Structures are given as structure tokens and as C-alpha cells.
Image 1 (cartoon, rainbow, N blue to C red):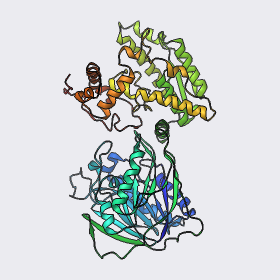
Image 2: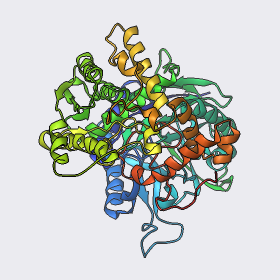
Image 3: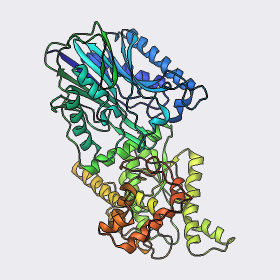
Length: 584
């Protein structure tokens, strides 16, 4: 039984940076080759980054991707790495875009994988199953492949597959079984959501059984706009044994020796599970190194709060760095939401790249101001105080406003100040509204909603509290100063826009509100389903009315990292003008 040393390169590409992504492939292939790897794997759309969205329709971008692939193959050979087979995802096309007038049936853009060897593109594979749900729109962009690519490497037949091919029964994995392969490679751009790692391993095991082959699953890491990719690469045998698993949210080279069945002579031509099997082979692959076997190790999953915190930090860091912002600025109210966002920002970027601004009005309590200052001291961020009351008074001297209009004015003055600092000093403004507030419209347009990125956009309020408590406990465990003041965690939430104001004046307690929102937003439950679940009908009616009438606000909200099964924006798309209401 041959032994193949696999290297799964869990790396962080950037959309559109073809040269930078190619350099990543070259440097990580060098590390893999130095470790004795005989097959090196990179994620889905590695060369272009993922997802590229409507860049697919630009023929210049498709041509650049194809040229970059050919150039990468030659560069790997020039680097002395030509003998090592490398699988890399990229954007291909075998015809005009489907949206063009000269489109050809069955031809167009392809989500593709290539095996590079000997300075050339040895073989290619086009993704068969195209996801068209949640954050995915691949039916909009790509034409599905109708072949299974099998390549013989060091005496082992290896099938190439891409991401969604793994999530659907039948197709490439059924074809791999009929084709008698020993290893199925699955390269991924699989976005993070909480507890997805618990789903992924059983899924890989099912496909390994279906293919009767070992699966090498490699996933990218990094943030791309509202998506976060967490890695979690792994190798699973045909009988379901987890051989090795990579850590989440960090770049990692997972090197592991795998015993695989020797290839047998296949029929000259073959169709399997409705796919045409295309076979090839690469020669001159380095032999399995002598000496101790390479063992990648097993990383145990972490607690939910730790997982979400890492995802939010990575999503924020990459959004800031990939878009080349030098720093961020946010309003520090002394409340829990701004405290958590500030702590996330410091973890992501360091205190020297975070500006926190206290923006007190006449309604800001003394303890809130003290809590904001305390957080700044704990985290080391750049702390400033800009009182807003003189500016609010200037508006009120020229406008006759009262009630909610005055409350919103205060929020908008704060937004003006933060944006002015952004314009003057180059910071990215972070907004701090949680998912519960976004759901019910508990925010001021062009006020506290002002910002270029919202790290907690997809975090329910009750989870915000859990994250704060976890982060402080984690700091204490490591002998560090907890970043979030206990007062910010323990006090009743308030916008402090009027005397004695509390969130509970306008909303149900969050322990009551969040389960209703989770059922309605994430679970698509209607009114009857929510009431049957035990929620008070009158509260359900109020909450659903608030959610339905706030769609126009959510449409204008800043992007933020997705961590749930259904985030506002890419996942949940509802019309603003919409007369449908749940009856109650």
C-alpha cells in the first residue's frame, strides 16, 4: 500500500490580488516541499480569492486568472518545485459569460481546480455542484462541470473536487467510488458560521464512505467583506477515521503521511455516476521520505464564545488590512456593545491602531463616562473626549425639535464627529449596533448606524454579553487585565438619549426578545410557529412589526462579519416595500 505525504495549505488569499496569491502558493509550496510533501493542496479559487462575485463577468479578469495560472506553473518550476504536484483553485472559462449576447449553451465561466506539475498545467477540473443558497450565487456565475478528473500520483489514483461537491450526495463522490480512486481531494472556500465545524466532520465522513476513499479537505482562512473562512482542514479515511485536523482561524500547513490503496488499471474510457471520467498521470514525483512518518496532529474544537471571538477578530482584521485602513475609530459610550467592539478592535489591530472617542451629552451618566475611560486604560487604545452638548444646543437654537427628534439629533451629532475624525485622520469608523438592535430598528440612521464596518452586526445582544464575560475570563486565565469593565457588563443597557432611558422602555428584555428574533430571522418561523414555541402572542406581534418595518434601515447598515446561519445582508434578502405581515 503506497504512502503519500500530503500538505494541506490553509492560507489567506485576497480577492483580486492574483500576483500576491500566486506568491502565497509559491512560498507555501516551498515549505511543503521542504517537509517532503508529494502533493500540495490549496483552497478553492486560491489564485483569485473567493468569492469574486461579478468580477466573473469581466473577461479581462478571467483572462488574467488563466494567465496567472500558466505563469504560476512556470514559476514553481523555476523555483525548483516543478516535481511536486500542486492543486490550486482559480477562475477559468471555456466560453463567454452567460450574461453576454454571445453566450454559448453549456459553456462559460468555471470554478476550477488545476494540478500544476513540471512547469505546466497537467490537468483541470470544473466544479460540478454549484451552491445557490444562503451567501452563495454560483448558478449566477458558473457553468457546472460534467467530468471527474482522476490523476495518478505516485501510484495512487487521486480525484479532484471542489467545495459544494462535498455537500451534495451523488455526483463526483459517487463517481469517485465507481472510478476506484484511493484519494479524493476537496478544495474549499467554505464560510464560517457557529458550530459549522460540528457539521463538517460528519459530512466528510459520509462522503468518504460514499467514495470509499480517503478525503483530503482543505479550506482557506481569512475575512472577505462579510464572510469569514476558518480553515478546519482535515484528512478522513474511507472508514471514517479522522487522521489529522488543522486549527481554526490561522494559516497552517498540515502535513501528514497517508496510506492509500495502489491504483489498478482502469478501463480505457469510463462514465461514472453520470460523469465522464478523465484520467491522467504525473511522473517524477518525489518518493515518500524515509524516516519518521509525518503526523499533522489533531486540534480539538474550542468553546463557542472562543470560536465566535476568533471569527470576529479575523473578519475585522482582514477588512481593515486588506482595504488598507491605517486605523479605526469608534464611539465609546461605556455600554456593553461599544466595549466589546473596542476589545475586538484592539485584539485585531493593537491598541495603537484604535481610537475610542467618548461623546457625552447632558444625558450621559457619570458612570458611563468612567466606564469608557476605564476600558481605554485597560486596552491601551487612543482615548479622546469630545462633548457633544454645545453642538446639539447649536442645532436646537435653530430648529424646533422635541422628543425622539432630539434623541436622534444627539446620535447624528456623534456620527458627524466620528466621520469628521475619519476624514481628517484616515480612520475607518466602526459602528457598534448588535444584531438584535438591527433586527428591530433600534438605531438612528446616520447616527449610531454611521460606520464602514460593524464587527458585531451578526451578534445577538445576549451573545454580546456572553462574549464579554468569556473575553474577561480568558484574560484572567492568562494572567492579563480583563479588557471590559464589569460595570459595562452588569448595568442595564441604555442609549442615554433622554433622562433615565433604558432599552427595556422600548423593547422586551433581551432574554425574551432574542429567542423570538432567532426564530423569526434565523429560523424563518412565522407568527403561529413562534406562538406554538411558547412565546407570548402580544410580544410576538410587537417584535414582528418592528422587524418588518425596519428593513430599510438594515439595507443601509454597514457590512459586518457573518457568524450565524442567516446574517442580515447576503443571507436574508427581503423587499423593503412589502405589505405582507404575519397575522396577529
